[in-house]
Length: 355
Ligand SMILES: [Zn+2]
Image (tube, rainbow, N blue to C red; front, side, top):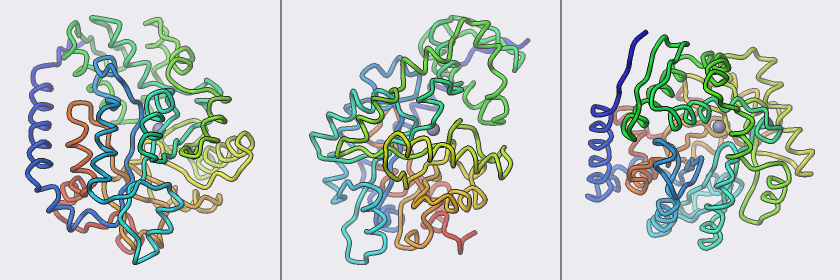
């Protein structure tokens, strides 16, 4: 068994990244990149919001950063609109630049912390909700791992044959980041953590209840003029690992579940873990065949008029960065991460011609 103590190197890497982002967003360089990569619009992705980022171990968005992002979007001349209006604007050459806010998974903090800020700025958002969040059966493995790291100063981690020492905050952040990366290397690992949770006294249903809103809260939220609930599969598994039929069922059942409860059509979808390695044309075609109008990935990039003809693998910019959220979002809304990912290649992500 390997004993792992992670902290100083990881912390240094984070600090360098934060300084780089501040320089880019503050120097106007991000704006220059934005002239090529900024497009007509951008879809921003958030998950949890928090007033206590130290409890999130590198996840979550500080609520003050969220408000700063909304102010900056407006200052940059981008209207904050819902997805249907975004689709309309993509097809309209005269339309004004825009941004769309999206929150994944259905965290309580979307309503408790983000909604008052959205109301203040009259900014709408789509919240993508998996069925298993509402039925309290979600394999929220990331919350289970975070809870172990938060509550233990050291622990054995049999699936990787490792032991972690994490008694201080930096060590906990680094350990949690290491565990997330370990699952992301192979998503079948997410299905094999039950014993780890049992051994460490972690109950996933208790965590799901603590962090996610329930059915009546979802229905109430959807009635708010600034909130639209979207689909996010039944089980929140990585779709690339599933057969065609299982993908159809996982997405289609969630659409029906939500539509039955919200008593309206649910036209918008987000791929779980929507990276290119886990989400592609097969999944996009299935989403389209099920009657959705849009689907968002987590490929970084902005929206261009070409996306009006191909709405099922839309790029989306992760706007969650706990150390310096505003600088990160400013770089993202200017398409900086697309430029980086493609080494200054094509600005338009995921349109059919390119694939
Ligand atoms: Zn998700």
